[in-house]
Image (cartoon, rainbow, N blue to C red; front, side):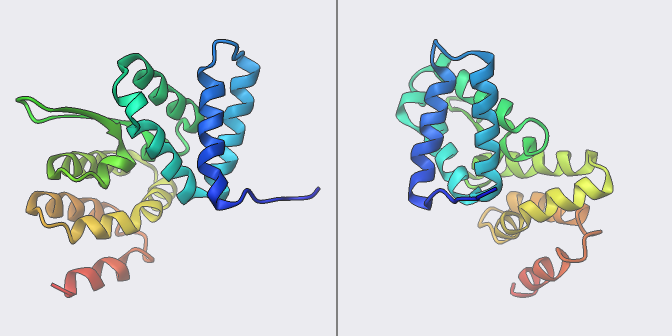
Length: 187
């Protein structure tokens, strides 16, 4: 069996093409199953580029301006990642209670420019982590370590508190401790 890697600069185009196949009227269950498998492989081998591609799809003008297509885009992400990466790509709905309403993913919410969205995403991550078994908890916290550390350094105090709560839930993972403590001691 020969393995090959998709060039990093082609991952985004490939994920977009797979999404287009997924939403195509001609897409059968078999086609969707193959798309799901390919996206899963890309996420495992080219995680950062796949995340960027999904961000481009979900936050793109075409999706944001069309509520029906937005719903299908989130279904695509949900179906492709299910529960194995469901935490990262789960849907996050934010409303400021007045005028603004935002639909995004947990991963994108953790990096959102609005502090309220970052706080909500961090709290949701904490809820997810607290419901997991020990082995799953460690794996989930490890996959979010850098973003939790970023949120601990956030300029918004409420986001920092939420991130510290997530960190405390993941403290059974000793590889997570040094990064958190080095961040806290820099204050």
